Image 1 (cartoon, helix red, strand yellow):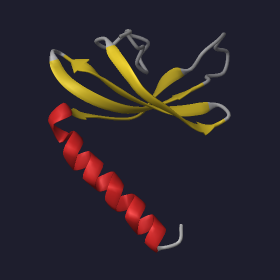
Image 2 (image 1 turned 90 degrees about the horizontal axis):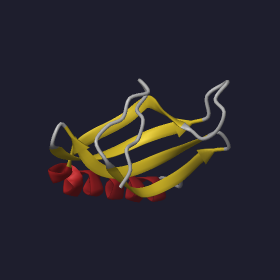
Image 3 (image 1 turned 90 degrees about the vertical axis):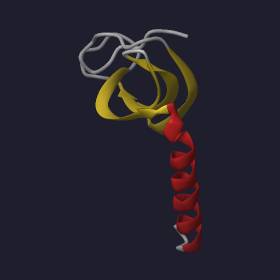
Length: 90
C-alpha cells in the first residue's frame, strides 16, 4: 500500500490500487481501497498529467469516495448500467 497525493497535494491514508482504467492519453481512472480518517473506504478517482508537472499523474477533484460497506450497492448499479447500455446498443 502507498500514500496517494490528493488534489491539494497532501496525502490520504495508505491505499491499495485495485484497477487503473485508461480514460485517454493524458488521464486515467483509479479504483482503490484505503481509509479516510480511520474509516475503510473505496475510491474512484481521475488522475491526469498537469501542465508543468515533471512526471506522473496527479489526482483531480473528480472522484467518489464511499464506505466499503457500499461496495455491493455500487457493484449492482454498475452491472445495471452495463445491462442498460447493452440493451440500448451503446
